[in-house]
Amino acid sequence: MQEFNPYSENEIIKEEELHGVRKVISERLKDSYQNKIHATIYKYIEIKKLKDFKNKINKGSLIDHFIRAVALSLTEKAELNATYDGKVYRVFRDINISYAVSTNRGLVTPVLKNADKLSLDDFCNKRKEIISLVMEWKHKLTDILGGTFTITNLGNFGVDFTLPIINPPQVAILGIARICKLNISWEQSEAPEVKELLPISITYDHSVIDGVMAAEFSQILQKKIDEPENLWLR
Figure 1 (cartoon, helix red, strand yellow):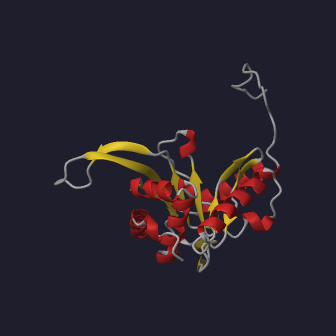
Figure 2 (spheres, helix red, strand yellow; figure 1 turned 120 degrees about the vertical axis):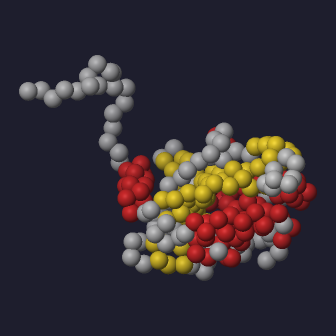
């Protein structure tokens, strides 16, 4: 008896087996979902002071300064600057930020090494250089391996919230959505006011990271962003 195909009357316009980069991405994400216990917290980051600082110094993009704030936050909450392979949990000293980039061959995460130590000029130049190499597919394996924490930014695509999958063997990933303005108050005693906010999510491997650690990291990040003049003092 011929097996029933519910799609037999629907014309196929494209059919292909996954291969190359797309297959590697699929296998890595499958491994992440099967072997990591995903949990996520969400937070609105107040962003006005960071935007004002960027406009004042007229150097670097908002995302450059935000990545730096993340890197400095990881120096204080190193538990998230780590990998876990199912057996061994490793916390690293160097802050190597994987920054997700969409290319015509699939999603790639070039690594900004020592993101907490570079000068602003070096940081901006390095990020532009490595993204250019990835987009042109001229990068080396060393350019995309060795990351200790990942940032993925969907704000440019008009996304309001995102729940990304951990980039194995790392233990956490931060997702960025688009900036918004909300009439809001964090305290019952305060009257609501319009605030410029950046929605973020932090997805972490609950095998080794507790929700409190992720929440504390988000608090540290907000403090760094509230003091933008200190981001590049090192």
